[in-house]
Amino acid sequence: MLQNKSYVRRQGRMVAAQKRALDELWHYYGISEKGPLELDSLFGRQAPRQLEIGFGMGDALLEMALAHPEKDYLGIEVHLPGVGRLLQRLREKNITNIRIDRRDALEVLDQLPAQSIERMYLLFPDPWTKSRHQKRRIVQIEFIQKIKHVLEPGGLFHTVTDSNDYAKHIIQVIESTVDFTNQAGSGNFHPRPTKRPFTKFERRSVQQGNTVRDLIYKRI
Image: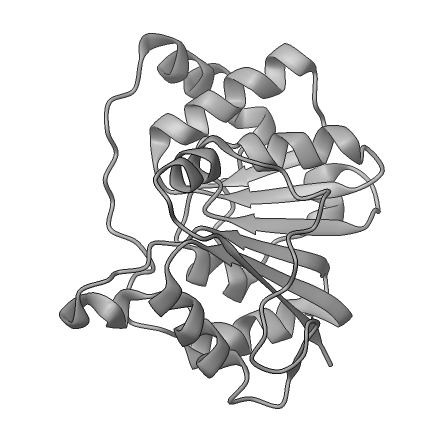
């Protein structure tokens, strides 16, 4: 198992409504199990499953779940204000096909059944731009091995970044393996899928003049 955490816990301030949602709704939407995850039991049905790592305030995860009620969505986020905010919105919209895990993504990946996820999203991960911090980047060989284990054959890993340096790092790491194929061709970025949710973070980044890059890899 990886020794480095894939995040630094920066909780920020939770407003009262977020705290209340966490207290009142975690028992329904939250995952408290510490061992292997039984997804059929957690969702109460059998369905195609998708995973978002680091969902932030939950905008993309919520939009995808609303658009595809026939699918189940597992979201991982360690920062409680985002978890509380998403819980509020799940109750407001009466959404039943999302479950949330607050543990480190690397730990959760170890607990997921093999070949249980059809598509995995990693949207705007922390690029850790300083050289001495780059070992904290979540996309490393060990991470790629973990996602290969949980993705079904032909499943997709979709990551998005506004950091040119991190984008090159992701390409180098994933394409050094023989487990995934770049859907845009080796070394290339994928055109932005029209159905990918456009988040507040992305809008702000584009307004600041950054270039957003999509990378989509298929598990062989």
